[in-house]
Length: 452
Image (cartoon, rainbow, N blue to C red; front, side, top):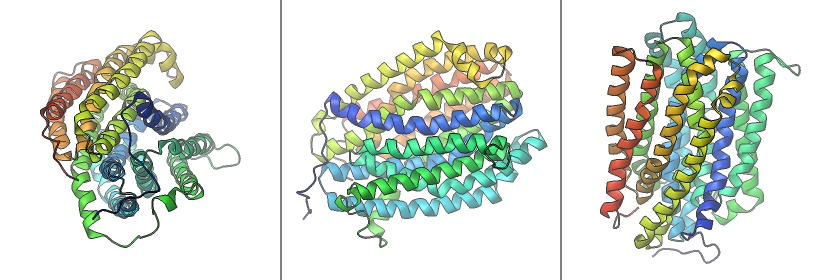
């Protein structure tokens, strides 16, 4: 018989207030790492266009491993949310501890792959030997932050899954302040610190991840969350929960990994067009990252709320909930699209790359900003599928989208050698293909009797 907690109720309702109460703190928490990315690029832009261009390659490479943690995060979050909806508080702590265990193992694998395999991959894919050397040196340092990032992501799954996303802001604010300070200090050698140039951004990112993680775990302990959720009660290996987390997360990990690998493939094709096009594309990645924060926050909200509501046996309210979340997501995306199209020069000028750069980047920015609106619909439905527990459906959608995406960008950029604005139009293809099967699955009702 299930042990039900009488002390704490983590069940959600489907009101707009509840949606925003979960989504807005997540937005703030997601924005901060994106501020870190942009800060890195602004400071690295001061070293020249080559540094800004290579920041795109190294950033997407590290993102491949970061999304492994994100996939594990999404799977664990759905499980924690389901237990919260069932009001099985006693089961949450053990899920969290097993998630930490899995995350640390994955981080060790990521470090070894970077040290042993990445040099050969980058040497084969990039045309310039000096660029390869710079990237390898940077990544050998940067990858050491992976264990801290993964534990940080497991903490996110816990707080969002238990409807306590407001605490996310504290850790991410600490991370942002630390990253800006150490970026400036270590890249340029300020405040008595060594001048490390490009590699300084790697050290700054690791320091900021450690700082954010330490602060949020202190907050969890001081506010009594650890005691309420039995977080540190039992850290013994639990084979059943490890199997459950891996079963739920592995399709999501594979989904996110192949998605970012395809983006790395895209950046490699862009590199063949020259440093300026690569630098422009790196700024477009910043746009997706920073301005897409609202969209991803509502997507995460869809995941946790759908799972929680299903845990309450309120399946009949799920579609109404998804539409409400989608309307908020689209609304924010339209505002972002309008802002970027009305003030493109103001945004692009912060990179300090001159008028030629801005003139070439504006048409690409218009394509990317419109794709953000399409993305705002697709990711909500995709994450609603995650909340139902059918992560294999997500993998199917991703595989179909990536297949069309890679074929398109290869033909357009490598064979036809069209301008990169045509390459970035691939985002329309990608997000449309993600939406169709996700929407069909949720409308079909096949998820209603699925157990987690």
